[in-house]
Length: 182
Ligand SMILES: [Zn+2]
Image (tube, rainbow, N blue to C red):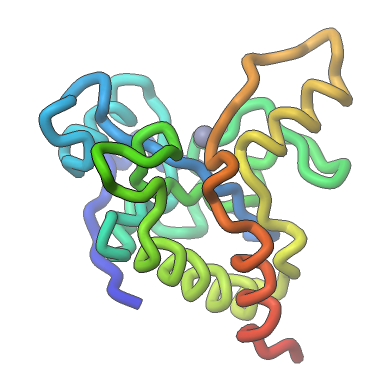
């Protein structure tokens, strides 16, 4: 697992949280920097401009770019609900995988094998250190859908990340298999 620190400004780090799950997203700078949608500075600028955050980015080569200490609350999921539990930002990490809309782009795959491997290794380590099961790792699309179903009077826009190209079955099988449960 190749990890580097490239932190967002501290005003985007929230309070300290206890990590009990993870939410998977995609992001790119396709709108603000179409010549290079995977440019890290351009992507960081999106977070800064919108006041959002994430725990980490997974670059196309699988490098994990830490955006803040993992136990700080990041503004990544908004209104969200996972397996009956609301407001995921307060108890999950937010993992942004670099991808243009989660779809193949200019002959490149939606997600590279290196990204999926990095995401597996990241969550094997995190599940073991924080003692949560991979069932508590879900997509932004899933946690927003569950929120909207549970809160029909407070619906928010549908989310599409990470989308159908993220290999959930393989991902969960690998995390389950590699994590050594105590
Ligand atoms: Zn998202």
